[in-house]
Image (cartoon, rainbow, N blue to C red):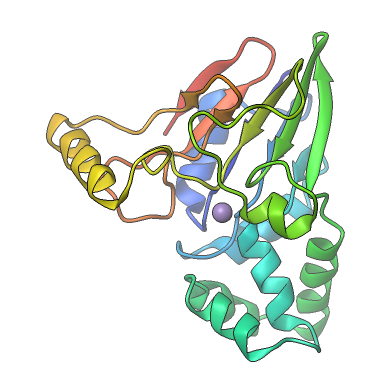
Length: 227
Ligand SMILES: [Mn+2]
């Protein structure tokens, strides 16, 4: 039995299934998906339904699921509706509207119940998983962005985050563009970054960069897997 963590699938079902194959994911294992299953790529909704039906997959809330919940809330404001519309919701909305009312309701009910962070212990080592970065409230936890020198607020607990593509972490727009161009020219893929205070596992899945990858971390031995 092993514990795996991945993040930010963003509708890329093919890559996700290739990863499950690669790690030999079985019913004995556990997979923690730390947010942003939806949007950008084509198959967020079908991925979400697969996760809902798989008891040994545990998802936590990402900012994209948070935007989706805001959008469908009866109290949704213009700003909340525009925010999700600007963030790659087209494939999610198209798939959602093809579902029956019951299926739509079960998806929203599932998203509403998602934890915003998880604490777990594997082989005596403590972990804290959150989509954005630890913070005071739900908004901060799903939207928070660290810098490479952000300290771990929970010393002694290994902090793992998604949300901020490793290519963006600590780079401004031009630096990021130059870095991605260099990666593309070398034919290299983005890799998990181990910073002093945290580990960032978002390798850009769902974005358009050539060097994107889906990364997965095995908590027993911190082995890294990529597709
Ligand atoms: Mn995100």
